[in-house]
Image (cartoon, rainbow, N blue to C red; front, side, top):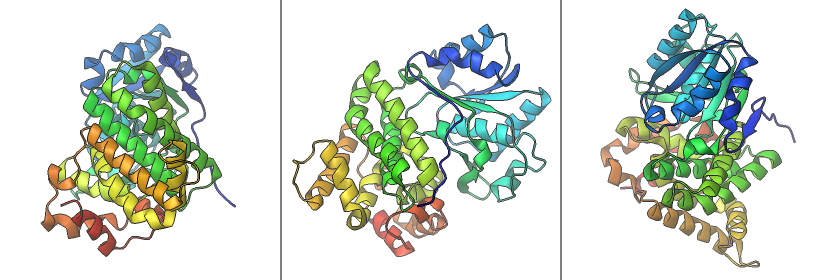
Length: 382
């Protein structure tokens, strides 16, 4: 057995842990670029929880609040320019997965001479960037624990990652309190993204004992707590367990990769301007059914841990119970049953499948998937 295992240098977890942000940032310098979304952090009232400890530590904070839900190469270029103009020492990214991905790209490309587009297109990264601190405010992306930045290029209509081992966060500050202002719909779609991460990392062809243990526990925690967090956003226990699960799934996917759900989700989300977690949530049971013959035992293990079947039940029955559970959870969370309900058109299937084929996520899927296989999954969504 041979594997690499990359994690953030330090993880600080728990309610109120954002209060340590100032003391952690001080270890890397005095001038901070704070990367956020355009409105959500401010409107939620959580911006003060991030700013206060930085200001209490007497750090110079430059705000960069221009990140969209689907960040482009241009926004990273603008952020990098702002960071350079202000000669910042570190980047703090506080927000959902898009914000964290932009923050890590700004930090990672700070010293690089080429344009962001060049690295998006495959130019090697040659220099270690600025240190960056991840502060997730959703429980879904796991981006606080990954080395890749998912960006879109509107010109070529591509959505893909820039990836570098040097881009791991120096500190991940995971404070579940920051997720408590998420509205139900955002809780649902980010939670389904996290569940997809857990199940796909658990069943990835590149999984190993370390990633499998994290992914399995993440899948169990999400299955038991997502609906509670959706029903009552102020449920501290559910929010804490969702934040922990999202972090664990992020570590797992960073080391084991994902699967066909993510291979398809990127071109679908880009084409129809759909939230990533929504697409993943819709696709998950369809891809699980496709993979069933290969990973039946693993699905059965999750089902048994969740109490969906009695000990001694056949693995086939248990695996099918898990797929039924995921379908039922989708429905309770208000996630549409099929992609056609959110815009999928029959005429687009071939080009979507074609766009998914080069995906690294698809390469990690436990069952090999050709274009015809992807088309069958998509046709089932019409």
